[in-house]
Length: 473
Image 1: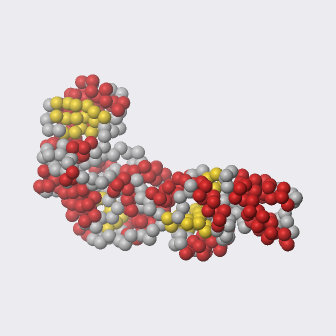
Image 2 (image 1 turned 135 degrees about the vertical axis):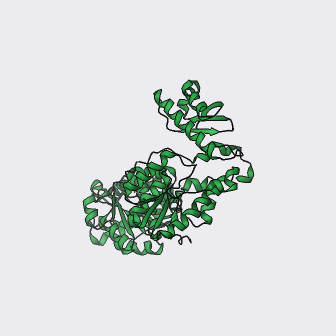
Image 3 (image 1 turned 90 degrees about the vertical axis):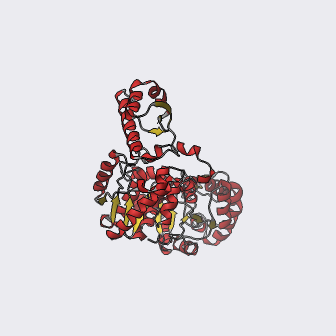
């Protein structure tokens, strides 16, 4: 299985006035100064209510045609001192640009404002853009957008829609400028947002679906967790349910409750659900439980799912690896999946765990706030052999502790029972550490599962990795 060619880098263009910056205070100050210098009355409040068109178009409302060019030169001479300081970034502007940087995308400003003043605004406000192009209006913006390879243009005016479409780019508009949502939609905008605070979420969805579409068909390695659930839902949206299947591997390391829930979730999305058996326990490297245990587990999974995908006519196997996982450094399972050609739509789209949960919630997926549930083998201390007995013991202990705390009126969200040999360490969220440590019901649940000694500590994801030496980092 060969991974598809990576998608072209995302380049997003932005209009400036009333899209990235609220220039009304600065423009008003400059116009009032211009009126004072020329002795010509200008209704600055009216003028700033219709920002967007070229300066000369606005000045023609107040000056005779033979004075417009010279007055525009004077306005620009006054602008730097009068307009830069009062201007502020629009709500969500910095976060929108940060979201592009996070995913490795490029951004540029294409504006009707003269380029020198546009750069002054960008520099003064510290807006993180890669290029600034000024002096372009309407469909003329398409030239710069096409030259920079922009596939999305964000603006606030009906003529920004024309600029986007003239470059073959998607037109995304915000209603922070002079045009209403209805006017922007009537002009042909592809996406209408309230303001830039909504752009990162839309980008997450857009980029993820763009990553999914070239796959054609896919088998999703579906654990039932939030990450793989979002991959599965995205595959259905991008490819249609007939081109998607979910596979939940059945093994001793999967908690029983997860299997039924995974099947139900796949049914809710209308996709085929497969439950192949995996045999990681037959791999010596997995049983040995050194720091690279996850490599052997993921290798077994992909070695089972890859031919299963081919059998069902599906082109790729996708995992739920997200951008946080890639940055974590210690992820031998990711290496095993990569060696076997698995695709990672979430990581490729730059979606970290926070974005996974936010987009899942926006799509109405019930998994959006599901606690992380690593496989049962991750509870066993490195160097202690993984056996079916130990995995079952951990599962019994966790079920018993959860039930005991629930009966005491303390439902638990984050829970791990770590197998340290004969000793168990129960990890719960901070507010429950004292309760779990003092409750005889918790101790009884752990001992009845087969452990002889009990510790209680604060839950920490990946806490077992702290003892690894540098060979596995």
